Image 1 (spheres, rainbow, N blue to C red):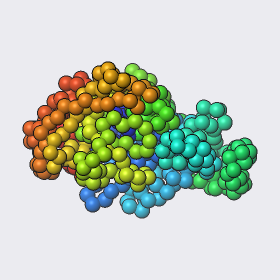
Image 2 (cartoon, rainbow, N blue to C red):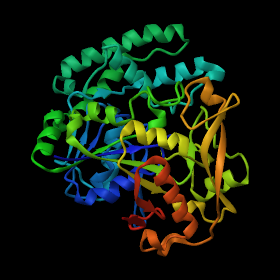
Image 3 (cartoon, one colour):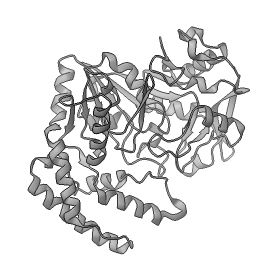
Image 4 (cartoon, rainbow, N blue to C red):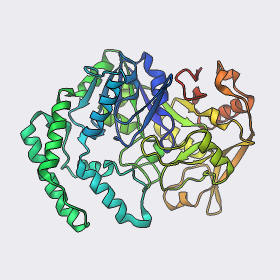
Length: 422
């Protein structure tokens, strides 16, 4: 078997879309395994930038087959919008993109619920993008979710949607949220289903057969390990498992199928929304990173919080995912900084630690830094990692020694060809 899992190692937005695209030229099948349209994977080819929310990033190569796996919560309307936009730009995915019959749906009532629950949290809001992801996973865990396999029976699908809208309306009444028209929602869902039904199949068997036949399979993760619902900075997390275990269950592939785990990390850190962020920089350096790195959400447009690379958190993500290789992105954004800082430990309640704390202990974490000289070099013309400035090579060596994972790819800019491998 030849299966690679690609995972974000921070709080999402690590540049996974570019890395997936960079490695997909030699891949046969790409599987999106978890999350939903809250993902925003950006791929820049020439003068064209594509932001993919549900379609696997590797599908911009014409011979790659894509799977939206059973662990994804699928917004059918968003997917249709995305497919239409890709077709208009010359990327026709007919016959190449398949949807798991086990994938749960994100429907209009999930988005209404998402917004209502966030308002109820008040000052404790977690910063959800309000795309219905959490409520869809709630329905999945509550065993009342509607799955893509139900597209095959429009009459039953209609009844199921109306039933769920009526149930949600009873809850909306207690939250002072306007009731939805169940029949109107069902009409929209049935219409979308007629478009997507031919793409629905048993993708678990498809993915396993591809791996067993020796095809190159890439499992594409969404969000990032520090947003994992179990191992992330709970409760400021997403609603799915973003680590390797989540990618396996969300694709239906067995653990022994994976022979390579690639983790993606920026050369600094960013975070969107609420939650602890020990290395956040509120000063000039953080603003410079935001401006130079264009650190605004590809899905939400919100400015990202910016700060320095955090080795404590990165080591935790590498360890819990069994990462073999690290793809280090946006190294060029560090150019122009007077010094480059890397957090090596935390002080929590007066005690120094190199382990990632949980809960309120993480809220209290104060970083301790190693500093490297800054550089002003333009990295656009670097032909290999050996061509990078000495201080940046020192940072890369530091990351490798601290995490035990080899840095096998360094991104030096947004273009597809600004990618150095070793």
